[in-house]
Image (cartoon, rainbow, N blue to C red):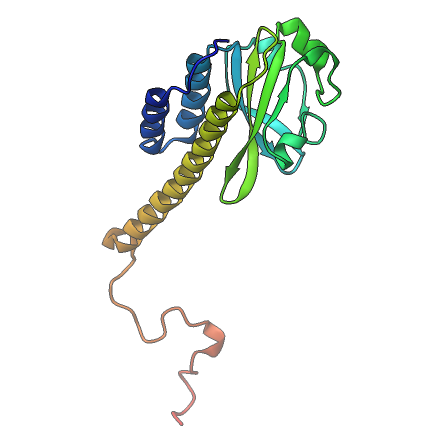
Length: 207
């Protein structure tokens, strides 16, 4: 990993690209790719919280092996849990840090240091963005701020994409409702839609 000033050009470029994306998968892939390239790190992963299992599930990853990615279930309560509640957490040496759930697997993967920041959307923590380095690294304030800014943007972009999808689905439903072909008849009888049990008896005299 290189010591470098925050690359505002990269940040602006990624922000613009993410703001125009309507696909959540495209957003997370763009995020991990951009962070790995900008910081020249070993890898980067976006995790999303599965509320039913309290596990962190991989949404996108770049630079890490399939073996490490599929090492086992990642618990939101055991794997750097503080970063989901308190904010960015940096781990200088993965070999002997009790906050890690899979320290042996990290060492085998060639990971030395890690940075984990929460991904927030709509005021709620929905996941974590993690950066991995091949050499022991003390993350600078600029490093942390850059990754945290990317996490915020990813969270907002995923939330916007979700709203866009919901809006698009609603528009399609409205279009279907407006389509005359979807209606049996444009004319409605006085009792259309009224349960049979409350319809007036044809044989009874009108009161």
